[in-house]
Image (cartoon, rainbow, N blue to C red; front, side, top):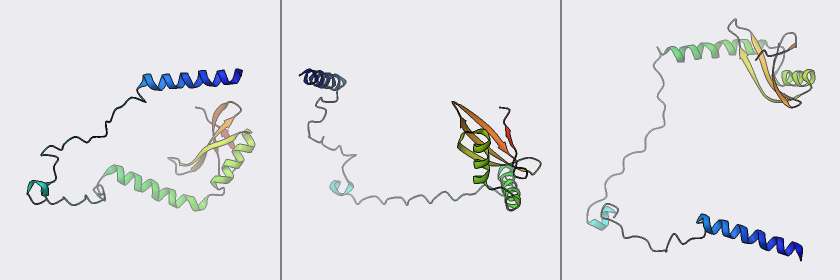
Length: 148
């Protein structure tokens, strides 16, 4: 009996919240408003339909070749492509090494190309109740804690 009363009170509370919030009020009478002349299709007004404009082409516009941002990005990608085959450690191995060394769980990782042309792995970990960022050297497999 006691649980029945609790259920009834809970349902009454939910119903009153829904009613006062406007969820159960009549907002649509079911009748559609009469269209204005601007909304009436052209064939009903005795005019031929206006041609529909062609769909815009997908954005394939590239920045001009002299764009310094595009040029810098292309150079970075070329440098990264040149260095990736020389890695002695894969990204998954770097993550496993960082997790083992720090006794944490990885939630993100990146491969970073440094200004001197070297590669480093950045692994973001949850260690206990705090987030840590570590770097893994692909040559020595040494894990260093970030200074951030």
